[in-house]
Every structure is written in structure tokens, then in C-alpha cells.
Length: 125
Image (cartoon, one colour):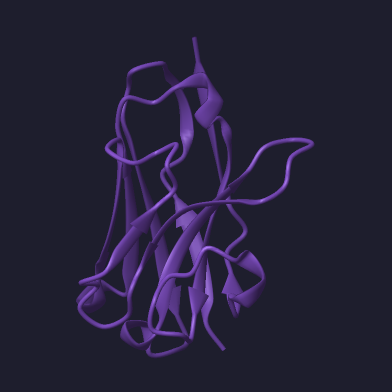
């Protein structure tokens, strides 16, 4: 059983940056691919970024965040990160991290095994 706890969210202005963290415990973190998703009120959960297990050599991004967001992982710290730059009001959502036993961070949220509670990101214009 893997427990995930997100942190780093907050209220920022458009153009600002934030770095989200996802701390894992209770399992072999490096074996899991990790994904970041977001959910805004009244909208479906949306894939943001994914990173492969072990070295994290493979990453994937939603078109809406490509070039602005960077996913990474530090296996020694059992933590995944989402660096967000040039934030826009449309990035406002609850951001959740998830762990997947598959090798790659897939886009389909239904395949993920473990989820955190989420952290709120609000971007004002």
C-alpha cells in the first residue's frame, strides 16, 4: 500500500511559478510510474504529466502544459515533483498525484493504483 501526499499548491498570479511535491511512503516508490492530474470544479479529471518508473527517463505531457510544466522524480527522497511555470488562470484546479504499477506514466486516470488527496492551485489574472 502506497500513501501519497501532495504539497506546494497556493494562490499565485498569472505568469508565476509553483513547484508541487508528491511524497510517497509505504511502498517501493522507484517501481511506480507517477502521474500528475488536475480537476477543476465541474470538469473531469485531466492528465497533466507522467513519468516512467525507476530512472524516469520517459516523460509525457498534456498539450496544454507542454513547455511550461516539468515532471521529475527523486527516488532517494521518494518524491515526485511538478514544476509549473508561466501559470495561467486556466491552470486553476486541484492537482493530484498518482502511482501506477506499469512502467510508464499513462494518461488514463483509471489505471492508476494509488492517489493522493490533492493540492489546490489557484491562478489569478
